[in-house]
Structures are given as C-alpha cells and as structure tokens.
Image (cartoon, rainbow, N blue to C red; front, side):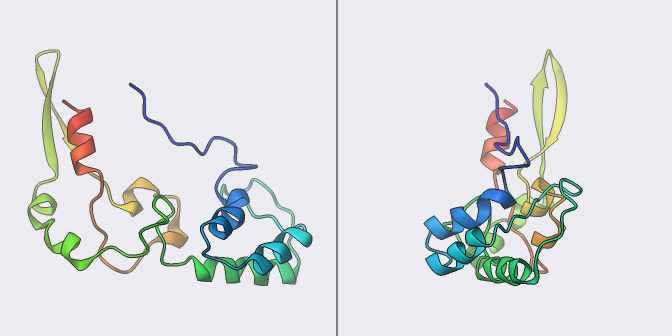
Length: 145
C-alpha cells in the first residue's frame, strides 16, 4: 500500500489550480475566476518557482480569492471550520500522541495523527492562531499496525 500527496507538478498543482477549484466548489463567484483567467494571472505555491511579477489587478484578484477561502481547509473544502466538540473530545489524544507498533519483532513508536500545520509546515500563510484539531489519528494507527 502506498499513500502520497497529489501535488507533484508545481506548474499546475496547488495555487495554479486553486482558483478554478474554489470556483467549482462555489466558494468564489464566476466573475472572479473570469477576471483572474482573462488577465493571465498565475501564482505558485512552491517558493521560487516563478519570479515573474503579477499586475496590481492580478494581485488584488488573488487576494480576493484567498480572502473568500481563508477559513477553509485545503484538504477538506466541505469543512469550513472545525467544531469545538472535536477539539474538546481530543484532550486524551493530545496528552499522548505516541503510538507503538511491532516491526520485525522490535517495538517502534510513531506520532498519531497530525494537525494541518504539521502536515503542511511550509504553508505558513495557512496557519491559524486557533488551536488545531488532530486529524488522521485512526489512519496513522491503522497504517502502523
């Protein structure tokens, strides 16, 4: 079994595809995507991929797109916010996130779950000042069995 990240081509993945993605999720209006596309605007997530400067109109349009999607989790666009109950229910997990698995007769430890900041440490512009829930704790335990 293999688990990977779909972001493999920085010229099309993440930021280049983000405006169209949030449009088709009805997060931004069609006119905003049209303005973005018709002015040949493009932005890249990977630092240093392109040094080309964008127009002021592109910058303003990009900022508007990002402001409309600011509170969304890029990995789950259907979940705009995490419910407070998720955070309070995780107190035990937060206290002990270390799991154990036996590999070739030897006990190995692993960290259960991840926060969005841990999963995407390079995405500093997505970090929230709020406490983040731990996601994927069941998945990491399953994969480490």
